[in-house]
Length: 255
Image 1 (spheres, rainbow, N blue to C red):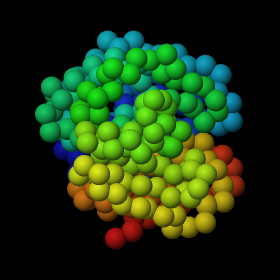
Image 2: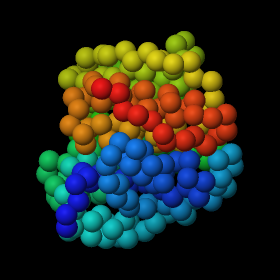
Image 3: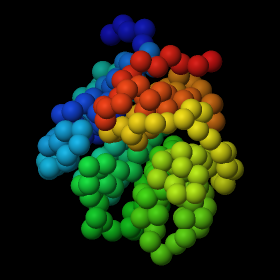
């Protein structure tokens, strides 16, 4: 199959409002000049302001979707959003590695939808280290990183995880320096990513947008620090694109 655009895959939930999940990821991929493929993990019952329910797709159906796409397309980068459990996530990671040993995984570890629905609230923590080691980078926010290891401080948690994978820590939930993101890579090298613009408007799905923008930049073969910085710029424009909860994807990539 001939296609000049590079392929990139999102494995995430379907949000009917189009603000988060698969639809949001595809919009981000297309804006970056990539051809987005998608595998559905959940059907959510929500709009941009209210989250009512989540219907999980059976793991065997998720796997079948993934295998079918890899039969047809070269997929070097995969972004993963909401998954039903850590066990299901680890199985997906193992499957992806078997299909492409060089695949890079961008994991957005979603534990709570912006409208208030909790994910993974009763999950075992024993699989976490194995999961991190199978990812290229994870993109938690401050609330999520603190919930991963409740018995550890955030500093100890970051040091622990950064020894196994890269971390883009989103700063939208920070109380000290709101909007300041941090990139941890190569063990514990810290790169501060301050806000580039004054963000005025909150947006549904902004975390999905940042992680899919980061995945897009990696698919475009940007170095990690440049990919992270460009993802920050993209998300800021998305946040400021209008005054509603649903943002627009009309960004022009900076060089």
